[in-house]
Image (cartoon, rainbow, N blue to C red; front, side, top):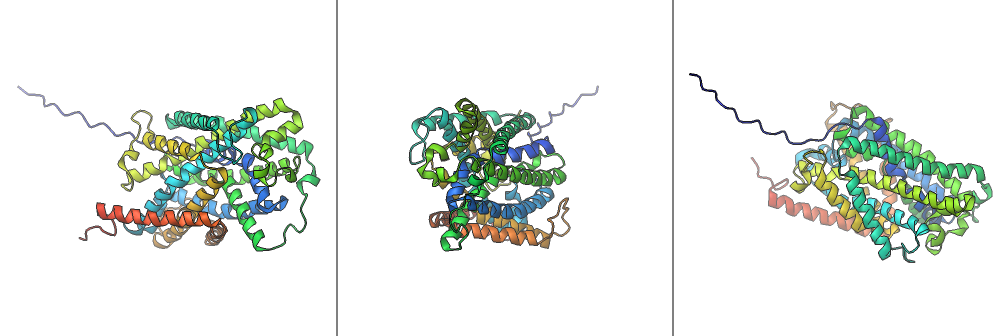
Amino acid sequence: MLTRVSRPDPLPTPPALERRLTLLPATALNMANMIGVGPFITIPLLMSALGGPQSLLGWFVALLITLPDALVWSELGAALPGSGGTYRWLREGFGAQTWGRLMAFLFIWQFILSGPMEIASGYIGIANYLDYIWPGMTQASGGLTLRGGVVVIVFGLANIVLLYRPIRSVGRLTIALWIGAMLTVAVILVGGVLHFDARKAFDFPPQPFAFSMGFLLGLGTATRIGIYDFLGYYDICYLGDEVQNPGRTIPRAILTSLIVVAVIYLGINLSINGVISWREFVPAESHPEIANYIGSVFVERLWGRTAAEVFTLLVVWTGLGSVFALLLGYSRIPFAAAKDGTFFRIFGRVHPRGHFPHVALVVIGLLAIAASFASLGLVIDALIGARILIQFIGQIAALWLLRKHRPMLERPYRVWLYPLPLVVAGLGWLLVFATTPPKVIVFALGALAFGVAGYTGWARVTHKWPFAARA
């Protein structure tokens, strides 16, 4: 008599990320990230940088830096698509078992500071605009009141809840938020076309381009604000494991979103400055009644208070779309590091049913809420200063090293006119860093030094490079 031998049940397959994002939601994700409340809160800061319309020069310099930098992101994102983006590229470019470990660790280190700050800037902008409808959100010094803090906490928790779901439904929600952002932009552009006054838009002060150290520092400030407005053209790179046909989709999403948003930003700047004279809100800190919600004031002057209140809600919707896109992409960075063994293992957990990194999502979301209680100007300067050396310049070097040491790596997209864009972007980032306020430079270098010390201690305890046992 034959006896049936029972076989053990196969082990369940661990949950994994799914490739669901196509070109449209990928581009919408980047654009929702980029537009957000950025242009609606930074125009007064931009005009204050050089004291007049000449401040737009900083916006153009920012574009000259981000456009070649976008080519770098495109090649790396197409050749090495994966969760975490920059984290993976630094590992591969500098050596996965040697210097790449240090660079990847330093990237995660600075990201824990800069990522939540960028999300926080969106929450701050939302609170500023809600102050137009519900006064008492912000203090005279620019910080949040208790009421504003409660609103930020509510929006921050709501953002986490919206993203606590499978990537397929997240893609559809991204498109819905993007449509709201486009409607908000359309209101400003239509108003600008119908009521544009060139005398206000191009009302230059005496000798607006006279070169001096003050002009150079002001240009640096204007450029940092412009770069802040453009941040997000690369957000899809952090979700490389969830993108369909990433070799084609990622470069197209990056370049399309950057070019389209650049045109939109120019139109928004000219529209608002062609209706509201810069002299009414410069310097921004002295005119919070206009500077904090300049888009709403713009609509009120054209179509009245009721229309302005409706527009304010559209700005809030747009801001929610931006922080939604940011938290979605940024939650994948510590997840990738944890899966790779370079960060706390708990961040590598994937939701068993939704197939998304739920621990990383919640932690980054809560850190962003905490960072929202700093001032907007400090948040912008600190997040950009912290990123320049390791992320932006670091991955430019990683691309060069990959071209040199891995020439046979499949590259669905290659940087045009290589290596010229790398040189232009690298010099541009160094210029921005050099003109950053000294306290921010000290903060960035100090954070970098602590990161090196932290990696050294961690590597020694865990016997990682350069303390790994030699065979």
